[in-house]
Image (cartoon, rainbow, N blue to C red; front, side, top):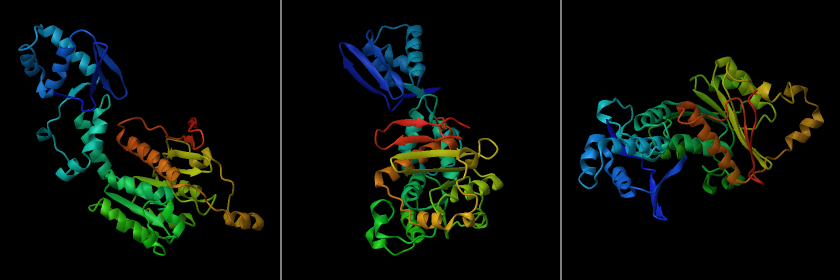
Length: 351
């Protein structure tokens, strides 16, 4: 078996000790034999334990058992990891995929318990995903960009709005030259530049009822992301009903006033439904008092660009965790709430 040192390994010397740091692992302090440890780390470059030992004994007087103890210490601290032989395993990624997504593969690989082989499998899973995004505005534009940049190969976009000037200050896919054009049309153009090989399907339509949404989900996505807010007070429950009917996971999140909500991620049959977690305020839009409807129709969603970005990127991270399990997903049936004032974080309990 061949090993290599973790590319996240960072070393420094202080007070005559060697410190070896790996993110998420306690820093390893070496007081005695630091030159030996430095050599052990630097010689693991896709080499076997015996090959490194043969190099080490040229410069250090050390018994094999003592050397193996050092190797075990380095492995237990995630400093050296098993090397993955690409030639001995079938990879469903192109050379371009491996090069383009090299940093995120290396990031997942660097975490404790993840190997290069696992991380490549994670990237294969990301590439295979088919995801539907309802709403390509503040959160949805960041999410669609992020999903395709990370390698998702198939997405469906649902929106019915045209681009307004105010959109260009808080919705990252649109610029002033796009004002007046369909969001769906412009989003597809911009996203094709991010991932030219991706399949991007679009529905230029408002989700007013269950039947419309069912048409948009005919290609049976792996996940539905709700990033739209109209019909106000009703759309999460439309999505909840249809996703339960079709057995499709569903997630939502958005900035609201001085709070960013990430989740919940609803898995039909495994978690509580959205309706159970947050019971609807209205049973039917037709039953709403006309004065309340008038007032609510004047509601204007107000937000700043960074809060859209934070909500979207936190959602994206949890979505990737859920599908790859490179780390534990933290929003299954629950929400993360982040204050944009104090940056205090709260995670709701799973229902």
